[in-house]
Image (cartoon, rainbow, N blue to C red; front, side, top):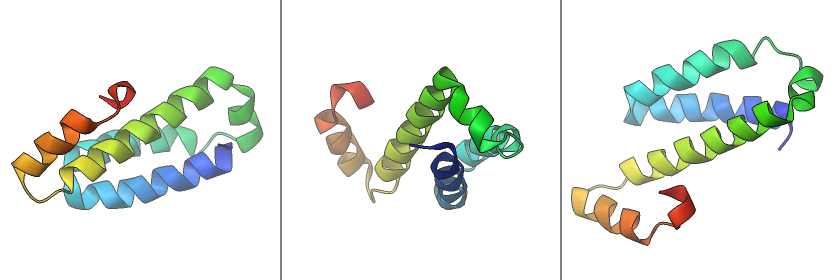
Length: 87
C-alpha cells in the first residue's frame, strides 16, 4: 500500500468510525493530522512508519466490522473465529 492509498483509506475509516465509534474517530483524526502534512515520497521512504500505518488501518477496519454487527452475541462469535493475528 502506497502513501496516497493510506491517506485515502484513513479518511474513509474516519468517516465510517464517526458513526460507530467516536473514540476511534478521535485517534484516527490524530494520526491523520500528522500524515496529511507529510509528502507521499517522504512517507513511503519511512518503511516502519508505512508498516505501522498499514497495521493500524487493518486493525481499525477489523474493529469497525466487528462493532457494526447487530448483537453482542454475533460480535463474540465473529471474534472467536477471527484469525489469531487479528485478535
